[in-house]
Length: 421
Image 1 (spheres, rainbow, N blue to C red):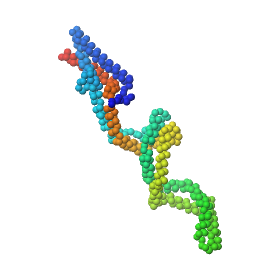
Image 2 (image 1 turned 135 degrees about the horizontal axis):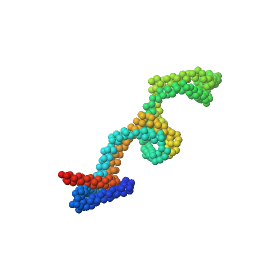
Image 3 (image 1 turned 30 degrees about the vertical axis):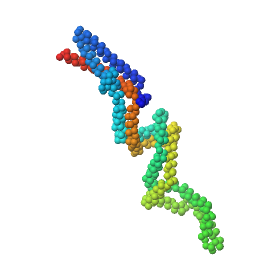
Image 4 (image 1 turned 135 degrees about the vertical axis):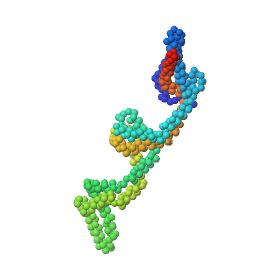
């Protein structure tokens, strides 16, 4: 069943009225030339000048009628006569749809064409400018928010989450963490930021000792000989050990220059140097890092990072006013400034956009082309003809007017040459 094109796809009422007015003017000019030809023919015997007017009017009628026939033949049969090669548009509507679809496919919807055209599109710059200075209101702001929310909700959550976790894990594997840890520890020791850590370890050791006095007594009792147990010396030995350890932790806590604290700091300094320069230590840290990444708990944590990020983006997309007014909005503005200032990041995003557009074209380009062809085929031929004629009718009627004037001038020129010769 034939259906008309969707509402809004045709010309406006003003365009239709303008085309109708030009058609009336062109027809009036043709009728005027016919009247002038009849008058000049009757008066040509009175004066030779009427011959020039008759030649002008005659040629103008020929030119006007010829152009009227050409213009009319595009959309219908002139005078209703089934003349061959007329009513071109309604008769070839399906072929026009196929040709239009092929034109779109060959010139727009092929991956290499899309990729070539996308080279001149600065997607990262546009995103950066939008994020750095988001519009305070308007359709662009609401439309961008709605588009972002729709995209996030339409993406396959499990597949995308796996991609994000894989990307994060790959990024963590690529980082050489040992030198970073060494530099961090070295900087902390230079600024004495390690002191609270050492104090905390000493405090923890004292509390652990207090909580495990019975365990120490049992260990001493089990390892003491029967002679010591018989004499009751194992209890005194255990108390001496506990008192000595307690005194050691107290002295370390109150004396910043305690020898054991100095030894601990020396060990930390050696660890910082080994993390940066010792291949064996760096290899051990790298192995530990990879084992930690493979751990199931870390995998769940990476998944939680993505889920929290996605949920935050969805909340922000659904309520851009609240999001852009808080910390998230400030982060987005900083991201926008970064996209404009970091060429490497912008290049990476633009490259991703090109690949994504080319991929979408490769996957869905043929479907879009088929949709265009089938849609045009489903349109009603009369409706298509009327709307196309109304859309370009004003210019087509100018062809008739110009044909009438140019034809008349050519006829006048020929008559002038004839008279002179």
